[in-house]
Length: 318
Image (tube, rainbow, N blue to C red; front, side, top):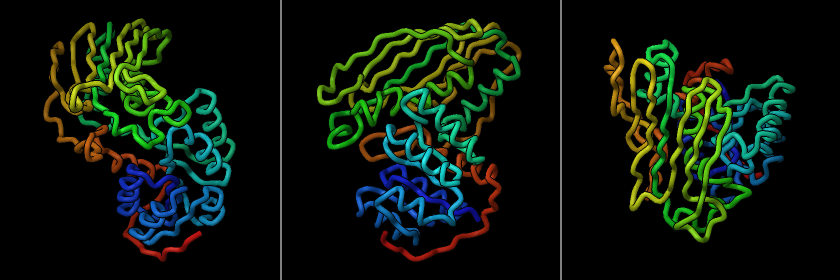
């Protein structure tokens, strides 16, 4: 049975803890807000800490550290855990700079440990089906792609939060839509050139953009557009990816890339898609499809754990 720690006890940490409890054992958690750490630890019989350094020193029996802290802290916390000999599962986005991402990879390679990044939208049934379609060459040459990300995040979402700050949030493409950008790379390929515009129209109290328009050119010759905003009035509207190819056109849509909305493929049809998981629900807004169960199953498989039940320990304050 693999043993896990969690750094950061906000909303997403609760989902991580649920899946850890199902597949392994949560042995320790950490948050600078002691009450959050204490509550999560008490629910799963884990130890709790308010210092990352103390957790990494005191939880030596653990195998994997899940990093669920604000975006701008991902690199530092992941590298510390890797340097201490833990495998790391880091929430999205991986980091806020290419340099930090490289440093995380270097730390994992130097320590001989595995580094995982949560990109659960790859497990959405229509996304997985279109990925297979591309890999099998059924669309032929990809001509162009349109990515649309139209969600709602009101002033209350950003109030009294690290979200919206340049140092810890990084921008809308980091916090809301990094999954969508990941799918561009995963399905279409590496981007050679990008240019665009960004603006903040409706959120004067934050330091990042709330809207953007981007054009891209891929190394394989395809061109594309990215249109994104968190100003969809009242609620999330759409998260979609449309591919125009030599042998067909296909669109994944819904609020969070959860529906196959259109297909016209030469000699082929996608059918019998399994139902997907619901979206991560945070009360007054929704996030991407909740596939953390599949992420954790892959982590357990890759690290070599064999889930065989649950254990409960005692809570200790550090």
